[in-house]
Length: 258
Length: 278
Ligand SMILES: Nc1ncnc2c1ncn2[C@@H]1O[C@H](COP(=O)(O)OP(=O)(O)O)[C@@H](O)[C@H]1O
Ligand SMILES: [Mg+2]
Figure 1 (cartoon, rainbow over the protein chains, first blue to last red):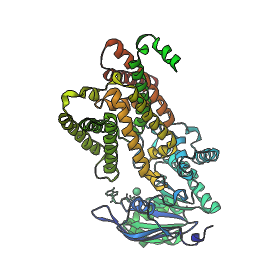
Figure 2: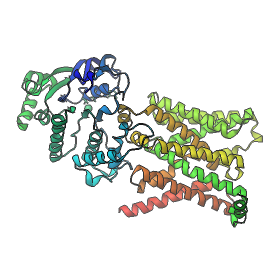
Figure 3: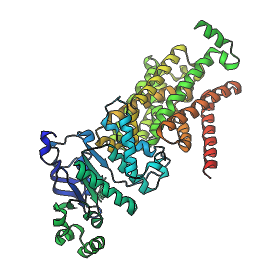
Figure 4: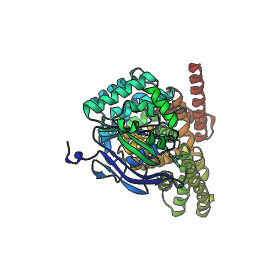
């Protein structure tokens, strides 16, 4: 363990952001501690994806700082393979796209090897393990454009798993995935977090699905409405209604899940 | 070496003629390099880039003729500058990829025609640069083209795993610390080099055919990036060899004939893929 690792893995401090018009994020401060499984929830358009991209350095906030492992983030990719990312799949690969599932997952290993260093046996083994973890071994040689949206999503999850990173940032990774596969993936994340001390931050707009799984919750709707241990936040109807607007809807769907 | 040349000289048909041997060599170099870079352009939806760089290269040829410099080097300089300029516009988000290409393409052709006129258009073979002039490849040119082709293939081979990650999804590649900006610039430079090689074979107006058609054919049947590159190169070299040979016997322009055989190969592969799928 490095000395710097005593503090939070990620801290976002007073983040303000707009794409040019209306502010999308205002005064957002968020801490991701080592070993947390944090669910970032909020309705569509609340700025979850934007906040993740700011955390990764893909977008630059107009105000505020991003720190990883205690150090300020100055450029995307600064911490290399220590952080793995599953982007929100807004658009499936429909055109003929020749990349196979195996190649996609192998791409997750590339940042671990230097330029001009070939991928090796360990990388291939990690790819096999990641494919098995998402149940895609038998589709490994299929082209991405020959898969359903849910299968593509699983392949992208496998790419992040193959990277073997300390921190996983996942943007709505369960979209389009069937219930059984979701269950298995949640179990896998919980195991990674509990047994190997990985830190996980998962974005979701589905409070009901995520509540029983995460250790902590943060509610975002342009501003950070609340954050804390899952039991505190999920038991705070006021915070939830300020996040999602309609309290009854939330109470209903929450009740369904539990 | 002499023995080899003598043996070659006794070959039947076009293979026995040394200008045709150089044409075949240049054609093969372009036939491999063009679809290799073309694959990355197509997968990144930058197919039009080939077209735009061809036009920029044309301005370079005209500029070099005006200054009395080597036209191939002039084309290379203009294509590299154009390519980096387009990449800059695209990555800064100041123009969508296709608009950035259109800006440079029209500028290239316009400036090229102006420069050619100033250089004394009557004296130079404009037609050859617009539509290719394989049969006028001189020994020095052949060596230069071969070196440029080797550079393209070696560049892609050296950074293959990074290019794979880039082609899959640029944003995640960037977030994971890959040198995305340098990879993009490198690809842009290699694309410019490729365009100059292909310009000699099919001319600036048809460069895109050699870089895009074999790739679209390969995409219908190939699984995986490696195989896409391989199939595209195979379709393209076969088309170049067939086109060049047909052009010799039919006495038609080689570049144009090669584009026709490329299109025929694409149609054949499409039909076969369609049959297999149904
Ligand atoms: N590239 C963009 N340009 C302009 N506005 C954007 C862009 N991306 C997202 N937005 C806007 O920013 C807001 C937040 O978007 P986003 O972060 O994607 O929300 P979420 O992930 O919570 O659904 C939305 O109102 C959306 O319309
Ligand atoms: Mg989102």
